[in-house]
Amino acid sequence: MTEPSIFTRILNGDIPGEIVVDTDTVFAIRDINPQAPLHVLVIPKTEQYRDVTELAAGDPALLAEMVAVAKQLADEHANGEYRLIFNNGPSAGQTVFHVHAHVLGNIEESKLVGF
Ligand code: AMP
Image (tube, rainbow, N blue to C red; front, side):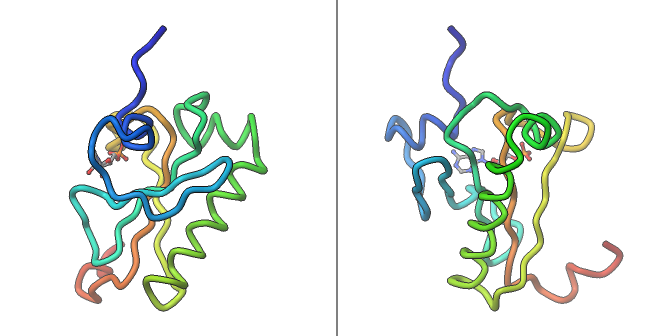
């Protein structure tokens, strides 16, 4: 058996983390290295999918639930508008291979330039 991901260990309470959403299938935690005033990771409880490509093919309803949770977080912690980022593969910046969406909100205008 493979080791649980760092996100699963946070969900299980094995390492510290701030869980801000917890549903039957999805949870969300504050990113430890925030890139915006709101920076939360939305994560399926299953570790079955490494990235959003696999998730979209295998369980599109679960992907839709992640997007709904992202919107809920943006409504609760920002002005309802948000940036949603999935890194897919090491060369694209992915470091944790348990699919997760970065939800960024309240982004400083200067950081939006050129993106
Ligand atoms: P990615 O690079 O897209 O795979 O995203 C992984 C994210 O997990 C990074 O933004 C990290 O800052 C974040 N991260 C890593 N360890 C922790 C942790 N213990 N608690 C919260 N976020 C974490």
